[in-house]
Length: 445
Ligand code: DSN
Image (tube, rainbow, N blue to C red):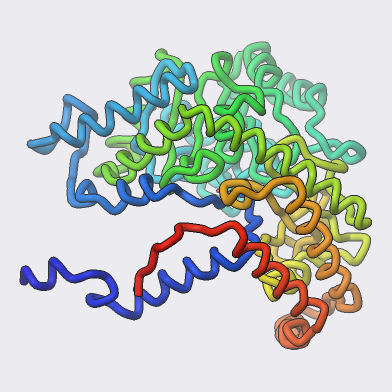
Protein backbone atom coordinates (compact mmCIF):
# COMPACT_ATOMS: atom_id res chain seq x y z
CA UNK A 1 0.00 0.00 0.00
CA UNK A 2 2.67 2.51 1.04
CA UNK A 3 4.63 1.64 -2.04
CA UNK A 4 1.67 2.73 -4.17
CA UNK A 5 1.46 6.02 -2.25
CA UNK A 6 5.05 6.96 -2.99
CA UNK A 7 5.28 6.30 -6.71
CA UNK A 8 5.90 9.11 -9.14
CA UNK A 9 3.33 9.66 -11.89
CA UNK A 10 5.54 8.13 -14.56
CA UNK A 11 5.77 4.92 -12.54
CA UNK A 12 2.16 4.81 -11.36
CA UNK A 13 0.54 5.66 -14.67
CA UNK A 14 2.87 5.99 -17.66
CA UNK A 15 -0.06 6.55 -20.05
CA UNK A 16 -1.26 9.62 -18.18
CA UNK A 17 2.34 10.79 -17.66
CA UNK A 18 2.77 10.68 -21.43
CA UNK A 19 -0.44 12.63 -21.99
CA UNK A 20 0.70 15.33 -19.55
CA UNK A 21 4.14 15.45 -21.17
CA UNK A 22 2.43 15.72 -24.56
CA UNK A 23 0.47 18.74 -23.33
CA UNK A 24 3.66 20.32 -21.96
CA UNK A 25 5.55 19.81 -25.21
CA UNK A 26 2.59 21.09 -27.21
CA UNK A 27 2.66 24.26 -25.09
CA UNK A 28 6.41 24.60 -25.65
CA UNK A 29 6.12 24.44 -29.43
CA UNK A 30 2.98 26.39 -30.18
CA UNK A 31 1.76 29.94 -30.30
CA UNK A 32 -1.17 29.65 -27.95
CA UNK A 33 -3.71 32.37 -28.67
CA UNK A 34 -6.90 31.23 -26.95
CA UNK A 35 -7.73 34.37 -24.94
CA UNK A 36 -9.25 32.54 -21.97
CA UNK A 37 -6.20 30.32 -21.44
CA UNK A 38 -2.92 31.17 -19.73
CA UNK A 39 0.05 29.58 -17.97
CA UNK A 40 -0.04 29.31 -14.18
CA UNK A 41 3.23 29.74 -12.31
CA UNK A 42 5.00 26.77 -10.79
CA UNK A 43 4.05 28.08 -7.34
CA UNK A 44 0.36 28.05 -8.31
CA UNK A 45 0.70 24.53 -9.73
CA UNK A 46 2.52 23.40 -6.58
CA UNK A 47 -0.29 24.65 -4.32
CA UNK A 48 -2.82 23.04 -6.66
CA UNK A 49 -1.04 19.70 -6.40
CA UNK A 50 -0.67 19.96 -2.63
CA UNK A 51 -2.10 17.91 0.25
CA UNK A 52 -4.98 20.39 0.51
CA UNK A 53 -6.53 18.23 -2.19
CA UNK A 54 -7.18 15.65 0.54
CA UNK A 55 -9.58 17.67 2.69
CA UNK A 56 -13.27 18.28 3.12
CA UNK A 57 -14.18 21.56 4.76
CA UNK A 58 -17.80 22.55 4.13
CA UNK A 59 -18.54 25.88 5.72
CA UNK A 60 -16.44 29.00 5.97
CA UNK A 61 -13.29 29.89 7.95
CA UNK A 62 -14.04 29.60 11.67
CA UNK A 63 -17.42 27.96 11.00
CA UNK A 64 -16.88 24.55 9.42
CA UNK A 65 -18.74 21.25 9.50
CA UNK A 66 -15.48 19.25 9.78
CA UNK A 67 -12.76 19.29 12.43
CA UNK A 68 -9.06 20.24 12.21
CA UNK A 69 -9.41 23.08 9.75
CA UNK A 70 -6.62 25.33 11.05
CA UNK A 71 -4.54 25.27 7.89
CA UNK A 72 -7.50 25.29 5.50
CA UNK A 73 -8.85 28.36 7.33
CA UNK A 74 -5.45 30.01 7.12
CA UNK A 75 -5.21 29.54 3.34
CA UNK A 76 -8.81 30.60 2.72
CA UNK A 77 -8.50 33.70 4.89
CA UNK A 78 -5.28 34.72 3.15
CA UNK A 79 -6.94 34.33 -0.27
CA UNK A 80 -9.94 36.42 0.81
CA UNK A 81 -7.86 39.17 2.39
CA UNK A 82 -5.67 39.43 -0.70
CA UNK A 83 -8.66 39.65 -3.05
CA UNK A 84 -10.30 42.30 -0.86
CA UNK A 85 -7.13 44.37 -0.87
CA UNK A 86 -6.52 44.08 -4.62
CA UNK A 87 -10.04 44.97 -5.72
CA UNK A 88 -11.25 47.07 -2.78
CA UNK A 89 -14.09 44.55 -2.41
CA UNK A 90 -16.24 44.60 0.73
CA UNK A 91 -16.84 40.84 0.71
CA UNK A 92 -15.25 37.88 -1.10
CA UNK A 93 -16.38 34.29 -1.54
CA UNK A 94 -13.34 32.40 -2.79
CA UNK A 95 -14.87 28.89 -2.88
CA UNK A 96 -16.52 28.86 -6.33
CA UNK A 97 -15.54 25.85 -8.43
CA UNK A 98 -15.62 27.76 -11.70
CA UNK A 99 -17.23 30.68 -13.52
CA UNK A 100 -20.45 28.94 -14.54
CA UNK A 101 -21.40 27.66 -11.05
CA UNK A 102 -20.36 31.04 -9.62
CA UNK A 103 -22.77 32.83 -11.95
CA UNK A 104 -25.49 30.34 -11.04
CA UNK A 105 -24.82 31.02 -7.35
CA UNK A 106 -25.23 34.76 -7.95
CA UNK A 107 -28.56 34.28 -9.72
CA UNK A 108 -29.64 31.85 -7.00
CA UNK A 109 -28.77 34.45 -4.36
CA UNK A 110 -30.38 37.45 -6.02
CA UNK A 111 -33.26 36.17 -8.13
CA UNK A 112 -36.32 33.96 -8.13
CA UNK A 113 -36.99 31.63 -11.06
CA UNK A 114 -38.62 33.59 -13.87
CA UNK A 115 -37.17 36.97 -12.84
CA UNK A 116 -36.06 39.25 -15.63
CA UNK A 117 -32.34 39.79 -16.29
CA UNK A 118 -30.68 41.99 -18.91
CA UNK A 119 -27.34 40.64 -20.23
CA UNK A 120 -25.17 40.49 -23.34
CA UNK A 121 -26.19 38.10 -26.09
CA UNK A 122 -23.91 35.06 -26.51
CA UNK A 123 -23.37 35.64 -30.23
CA UNK A 124 -22.40 39.26 -29.53
CA UNK A 125 -19.81 38.25 -26.94
CA UNK A 126 -21.76 37.30 -23.80
CA UNK A 127 -21.38 33.97 -21.97
CA UNK A 128 -23.57 30.85 -21.97
CA UNK A 129 -24.50 31.57 -18.35
CA UNK A 130 -25.67 35.05 -19.31
CA UNK A 131 -28.99 33.48 -20.25
CA UNK A 132 -28.35 31.50 -23.41
CA UNK A 133 -31.50 29.51 -24.25
CA UNK A 134 -29.43 26.27 -24.30
CA UNK A 135 -28.13 26.95 -20.79
CA UNK A 136 -29.74 26.37 -17.38
CA UNK A 137 -29.80 30.15 -16.88
CA UNK A 138 -31.82 30.77 -20.03
CA UNK A 139 -34.33 28.11 -19.02
CA UNK A 140 -34.72 29.28 -15.42
CA UNK A 141 -34.78 33.06 -15.69
CA UNK A 142 -36.34 35.49 -18.10
CA UNK A 143 -33.26 36.86 -19.88
CA UNK A 144 -33.48 39.70 -22.36
CA UNK A 145 -30.34 40.55 -24.30
CA UNK A 146 -28.46 43.57 -25.54
CA UNK A 147 -25.81 43.25 -28.22
CA UNK A 148 -23.38 45.47 -30.03
CA UNK A 149 -24.29 48.16 -32.53
CA UNK A 150 -24.36 46.86 -36.13
CA UNK A 151 -22.12 49.66 -37.41
CA UNK A 152 -19.59 50.21 -34.62
CA UNK A 153 -19.72 46.62 -33.28
CA UNK A 154 -19.41 48.15 -29.80
CA UNK A 155 -21.87 48.24 -26.92
CA UNK A 156 -24.30 51.12 -27.41
CA UNK A 157 -24.91 52.31 -23.84
CA UNK A 158 -27.86 54.49 -24.85
CA UNK A 159 -29.52 51.40 -26.35
CA UNK A 160 -28.79 49.38 -23.20
CA UNK A 161 -30.35 52.15 -21.10
CA UNK A 162 -33.44 52.26 -23.32
CA UNK A 163 -33.83 48.50 -23.01
CA UNK A 164 -33.40 48.65 -19.25
CA UNK A 165 -36.07 51.35 -18.96
CA UNK A 166 -38.46 49.35 -21.16
CA UNK A 167 -37.82 45.88 -19.70
CA UNK A 168 -37.36 46.80 -16.01
CA UNK A 169 -35.01 43.85 -15.22
CA UNK A 170 -34.25 42.86 -11.65
CA UNK A 171 -30.57 42.39 -12.52
CA UNK A 172 -28.30 43.84 -15.20
CA UNK A 173 -25.23 41.79 -16.17
CA UNK A 174 -22.18 43.35 -17.78
CA UNK A 175 -19.10 41.48 -18.95
CA UNK A 176 -18.26 39.33 -21.94
CA UNK A 177 -16.16 36.50 -23.30
CA UNK A 178 -15.68 37.75 -26.84
CA UNK A 179 -15.67 41.55 -26.77
CA UNK A 180 -12.49 43.37 -27.70
CA UNK A 181 -13.34 46.81 -26.32
CA UNK A 182 -13.33 48.31 -22.84
CA UNK A 183 -16.53 47.88 -20.88
CA UNK A 184 -17.87 50.93 -19.07
CA UNK A 185 -18.90 49.29 -15.81
CA UNK A 186 -19.74 52.66 -14.24
CA UNK A 187 -22.33 53.26 -16.98
CA UNK A 188 -23.83 49.80 -16.46
CA UNK A 189 -24.06 50.36 -12.70
CA UNK A 190 -25.64 53.79 -13.24
CA UNK A 191 -28.24 52.34 -15.63
CA UNK A 192 -29.05 49.62 -13.10
CA UNK A 193 -29.44 52.18 -10.34
CA UNK A 194 -31.67 54.36 -12.52
CA UNK A 195 -34.10 51.50 -13.22
CA UNK A 196 -33.97 50.02 -9.71
CA UNK A 197 -32.06 46.88 -10.81
CA UNK A 198 -29.11 45.17 -9.14
CA UNK A 199 -25.84 45.24 -11.07
CA UNK A 200 -23.50 42.34 -11.70
CA UNK A 201 -20.21 42.28 -13.62
CA UNK A 202 -18.59 39.13 -14.98
CA UNK A 203 -14.97 40.23 -15.31
CA UNK A 204 -13.52 36.76 -15.89
CA UNK A 205 -11.63 37.61 -19.06
CA UNK A 206 -10.20 40.94 -17.94
CA UNK A 207 -9.46 40.54 -14.21
CA UNK A 208 -5.72 40.69 -14.76
CA UNK A 209 -6.10 43.86 -16.82
CA UNK A 210 -8.22 45.47 -14.09
CA UNK A 211 -5.65 44.54 -11.44
CA UNK A 212 -2.90 45.93 -13.64
CA UNK A 213 -4.77 49.21 -14.11
CA UNK A 214 -5.18 48.87 -17.88
CA UNK A 215 -8.96 48.36 -17.82
CA UNK A 216 -11.46 50.31 -15.70
CA UNK A 217 -12.67 48.50 -12.59
CA UNK A 218 -16.31 47.65 -11.79
CA UNK A 219 -15.62 48.59 -8.14
CA UNK A 220 -17.02 50.21 -6.09
CA UNK A 221 -20.25 50.85 -8.03
CA UNK A 222 -21.21 47.29 -9.05
CA UNK A 223 -23.21 45.25 -6.54
CA UNK A 224 -21.77 41.83 -7.34
CA UNK A 225 -18.64 40.94 -9.34
CA UNK A 226 -17.65 37.47 -10.50
CA UNK A 227 -14.31 36.45 -11.90
CA UNK A 228 -12.72 33.20 -12.85
CA UNK A 229 -9.19 32.86 -11.51
CA UNK A 230 -7.41 31.10 -14.38
CA UNK A 231 -7.62 33.57 -17.26
CA UNK A 232 -5.67 36.85 -17.20
CA UNK A 233 -5.32 36.45 -13.40
CA UNK A 234 -3.15 33.40 -14.15
CA UNK A 235 -4.25 31.31 -11.17
CA UNK A 236 -5.81 27.85 -10.87
CA UNK A 237 -9.07 26.94 -12.62
CA UNK A 238 -11.78 28.32 -10.38
CA UNK A 239 -13.72 31.46 -9.58
CA UNK A 240 -14.63 33.93 -6.86
CA UNK A 241 -17.50 36.27 -6.15
CA UNK A 242 -16.97 39.73 -4.72
CA UNK A 243 -19.85 41.88 -3.52
CA UNK A 244 -21.07 44.76 -1.42
CA UNK A 245 -21.58 43.88 2.26
CA UNK A 246 -25.38 43.94 1.92
CA UNK A 247 -25.25 40.92 -0.43
CA UNK A 248 -22.58 38.99 1.49
CA UNK A 249 -24.80 36.66 3.46
CA UNK A 250 -27.01 35.79 0.49
CA UNK A 251 -23.98 35.11 -1.74
CA UNK A 252 -22.25 32.91 0.84
CA UNK A 253 -25.42 30.90 1.46
CA UNK A 254 -25.97 30.51 -2.28
CA UNK A 255 -22.44 29.14 -2.82
CA UNK A 256 -22.61 26.85 0.21
CA UNK A 257 -24.94 25.11 0.95
CA UNK A 258 -26.98 26.40 -2.00
CA UNK A 259 -24.88 25.30 -4.97
CA UNK A 260 -21.76 23.53 -3.75
CA UNK A 261 -20.52 21.02 -1.21
CA UNK A 262 -16.92 20.92 -0.02
CA UNK A 263 -14.72 23.73 -1.32
CA UNK A 264 -11.64 22.73 -3.30
CA UNK A 265 -9.07 23.71 -0.70
CA UNK A 266 -6.12 22.99 -3.01
CA UNK A 267 -7.62 25.46 -5.49
CA UNK A 268 -8.22 27.99 -2.71
CA UNK A 269 -4.54 27.79 -1.72
CA UNK A 270 -3.53 28.21 -5.36
CA UNK A 271 -5.90 31.19 -5.72
CA UNK A 272 -4.15 32.78 -2.72
CA UNK A 273 -0.79 32.29 -4.44
CA UNK A 274 -2.03 33.79 -7.72
CA UNK A 275 -3.47 36.77 -5.86
CA UNK A 276 -0.15 37.33 -4.10
CA UNK A 277 1.59 37.21 -7.48
CA UNK A 278 -0.93 39.71 -8.82
CA UNK A 279 0.08 42.14 -6.04
CA UNK A 280 3.70 42.27 -7.28
CA UNK A 281 4.86 45.23 -9.40
CA UNK A 282 5.80 42.93 -12.30
CA UNK A 283 2.15 41.88 -12.65
CA UNK A 284 1.35 45.45 -13.73
CA UNK A 285 4.01 45.19 -16.46
CA UNK A 286 2.53 41.88 -17.60
CA UNK A 287 -1.00 43.33 -17.76
CA UNK A 288 0.17 46.40 -19.69
CA UNK A 289 2.11 44.21 -22.10
CA UNK A 290 -0.96 42.03 -22.79
CA UNK A 291 -2.76 45.11 -24.09
CA UNK A 292 0.27 46.40 -26.03
CA UNK A 293 0.68 42.99 -27.59
CA UNK A 294 -2.99 42.75 -28.56
CA UNK A 295 -2.80 46.17 -30.20
CA UNK A 296 0.37 45.21 -32.08
CA UNK A 297 -1.14 41.91 -33.19
CA UNK A 298 -4.32 43.67 -34.34
CA UNK A 299 -2.26 46.22 -36.28
CA UNK A 300 -0.28 43.46 -37.98
CA UNK A 301 -3.43 41.57 -38.95
CA UNK A 302 -5.09 44.70 -40.35
CA UNK A 303 -1.94 45.46 -42.36
CA UNK A 304 -2.28 41.97 -43.80
CA UNK A 305 -5.83 42.78 -44.97
CA UNK A 306 -7.61 40.84 -42.21
CA UNK A 307 -10.91 42.26 -40.97
CA UNK A 308 -11.38 42.65 -37.21
CA UNK A 309 -14.68 43.00 -35.40
CA UNK A 310 -14.97 46.66 -34.27
CA UNK A 311 -11.76 47.36 -36.19
CA UNK A 312 -9.35 46.57 -33.35
CA UNK A 313 -8.92 45.99 -29.64
CA UNK A 314 -8.59 47.77 -26.29
CA UNK A 315 -7.96 44.66 -24.22
CA UNK A 316 -6.39 41.19 -24.52
CA UNK A 317 -8.70 39.87 -27.22
CA UNK A 318 -9.22 40.13 -30.97
CA UNK A 319 -12.16 38.80 -32.95
CA UNK A 320 -11.41 38.14 -36.61
CA UNK A 321 -14.28 38.44 -39.08
CA UNK A 322 -13.74 35.95 -41.92
CA UNK A 323 -16.87 36.79 -43.91
CA UNK A 324 -14.76 38.48 -46.61
CA UNK A 325 -13.63 34.89 -47.37
CA UNK A 326 -17.04 33.31 -46.70
CA UNK A 327 -19.57 32.95 -43.91
CA UNK A 328 -18.87 29.96 -41.66
CA UNK A 329 -15.15 30.02 -42.46
CA UNK A 330 -14.00 29.98 -38.80
CA UNK A 331 -13.59 26.21 -38.74
CA UNK A 332 -11.21 26.23 -41.74
CA UNK A 333 -9.08 28.98 -40.22
CA UNK A 334 -8.94 27.21 -36.84
CA UNK A 335 -7.94 23.87 -38.36
CA UNK A 336 -5.34 25.34 -40.72
CA UNK A 337 -3.78 27.43 -37.94
CA UNK A 338 -3.68 24.33 -35.75
CA UNK A 339 -1.63 22.58 -38.46
CA UNK A 340 0.80 25.50 -38.20
CA UNK A 341 0.96 25.10 -34.37
CA UNK A 342 -1.06 28.28 -33.81
CA UNK A 343 -3.95 27.63 -31.43
CA UNK A 344 -7.11 29.72 -31.77
CA UNK A 345 -10.83 29.09 -31.39
CA UNK A 346 -13.56 29.46 -33.97
CA UNK A 347 -16.13 31.96 -32.71
CA UNK A 348 -19.36 33.63 -33.70
CA UNK A 349 -19.20 37.26 -34.77
CA UNK A 350 -21.90 39.83 -34.01
CA UNK A 351 -24.95 39.35 -36.29
CA UNK A 352 -23.49 35.94 -37.18
CA UNK A 353 -24.68 34.91 -40.65
CA UNK A 354 -23.77 31.22 -40.08
CA UNK A 355 -24.15 28.93 -37.02
CA UNK A 356 -22.30 28.53 -33.66
CA UNK A 357 -20.67 25.27 -34.80
CA UNK A 358 -19.67 26.74 -38.16
CA UNK A 359 -19.17 30.36 -37.16
CA UNK A 360 -17.68 33.13 -39.27
CA UNK A 361 -14.93 34.24 -36.94
CA UNK A 362 -11.96 33.20 -34.90
CA UNK A 363 -11.11 34.53 -31.45
CA UNK A 364 -7.53 35.15 -30.38
CA UNK A 365 -5.79 36.79 -27.43
CA UNK A 366 -2.40 37.62 -25.99
CA UNK A 367 -2.35 36.44 -22.31
CA UNK A 368 -0.37 33.22 -22.81
CA UNK A 369 2.19 34.58 -25.25
CA UNK A 370 2.67 37.62 -22.99
CA UNK A 371 3.28 35.35 -20.01
CA UNK A 372 5.96 33.68 -22.13
CA UNK A 373 7.68 37.06 -22.56
CA UNK A 374 6.76 37.86 -26.17
CA UNK A 375 6.52 41.51 -27.14
CA UNK A 376 5.57 43.73 -30.10
CA UNK A 377 8.19 42.40 -32.59
CA UNK A 378 6.91 38.85 -32.06
CA UNK A 379 3.31 40.09 -32.53
CA UNK A 380 4.18 41.45 -35.97
CA UNK A 381 5.72 38.09 -36.90
CA UNK A 382 2.69 36.17 -35.58
CA UNK A 383 0.31 38.40 -37.55
CA UNK A 384 2.24 37.70 -40.75
CA UNK A 385 2.28 33.95 -40.08
CA UNK A 386 -1.46 33.89 -39.34
CA UNK A 387 -2.22 35.84 -42.49
CA UNK A 388 -0.16 33.40 -44.59
CA UNK A 389 -2.09 30.45 -43.17
CA UNK A 390 -5.53 32.05 -43.48
CA UNK A 391 -4.79 32.95 -47.10
CA UNK A 392 -4.14 29.26 -47.86
CA UNK A 393 -7.70 28.42 -46.75
CA UNK A 394 -9.34 30.81 -49.21
CA UNK A 395 -10.09 28.24 -51.86
CA UNK A 396 -12.10 26.06 -49.47
CA UNK A 397 -15.73 26.74 -48.64
CA UNK A 398 -18.28 25.10 -46.42
CA UNK A 399 -20.67 22.72 -48.23
CA UNK A 400 -24.27 23.88 -47.91
CA UNK A 401 -25.45 20.31 -47.20
CA UNK A 402 -24.76 19.36 -43.57
CA UNK A 403 -24.03 15.71 -44.44
CA UNK A 404 -21.22 16.78 -46.77
CA UNK A 405 -19.44 18.93 -44.20
CA UNK A 406 -17.71 16.24 -42.13
CA UNK A 407 -16.08 14.39 -45.07
CA UNK A 408 -15.18 17.70 -46.69
CA UNK A 409 -13.53 18.98 -43.49
CA UNK A 410 -11.59 15.71 -43.14
CA UNK A 411 -10.33 16.07 -46.70
CA UNK A 412 -9.47 19.72 -46.01
CA UNK A 413 -7.53 18.75 -42.86
CA UNK A 414 -5.44 16.21 -44.66
CA UNK A 415 -4.77 18.50 -47.66
CA UNK A 416 -3.88 21.45 -45.49
CA UNK A 417 -1.39 19.42 -43.46
CA UNK A 418 0.51 18.74 -46.71
CA UNK A 419 0.48 22.43 -47.70
CA UNK A 420 4.10 23.55 -48.01
CA UNK A 421 3.46 27.18 -46.98
CA UNK A 422 1.70 26.01 -43.82
CA UNK A 423 4.51 23.55 -43.08
CA UNK A 424 7.00 26.39 -43.40
CA UNK A 425 4.92 28.53 -40.98
CA UNK A 426 4.86 25.59 -38.57
CA UNK A 427 8.68 25.41 -38.62
CA UNK A 428 8.86 29.16 -37.98
CA UNK A 429 6.33 28.89 -35.12
CA UNK A 430 8.37 26.16 -33.46
CA UNK A 431 11.53 28.25 -33.78
CA UNK A 432 9.81 31.29 -32.32
CA UNK A 433 8.22 29.31 -29.48
CA UNK A 434 11.51 27.74 -28.47
CA UNK A 435 12.98 31.21 -27.98
CA UNK A 436 10.46 31.68 -25.12
CA UNK A 437 10.83 28.58 -22.94
CA UNK A 438 8.00 27.30 -20.75
CA UNK A 439 8.49 25.48 -17.42
CA UNK A 440 12.17 24.82 -18.12
CA UNK A 441 13.45 21.52 -16.78
CA UNK A 442 9.98 20.17 -16.06
CA UNK A 443 9.24 16.64 -17.24
CA UNK A 444 6.68 13.96 -16.42
CA UNK A 445 8.20 10.95 -18.20
N1 DSN B 1 -15.08 29.19 -21.95
C1 DSN B 1 -14.58 30.48 -21.55
C2 DSN B 1 -13.99 31.22 -22.69
O1 DSN B 1 -13.31 30.57 -23.48
O2 DSN B 1 -14.13 32.42 -22.81
C3 DSN B 1 -15.58 31.29 -20.82
O3 DSN B 1 -16.08 30.54 -19.77
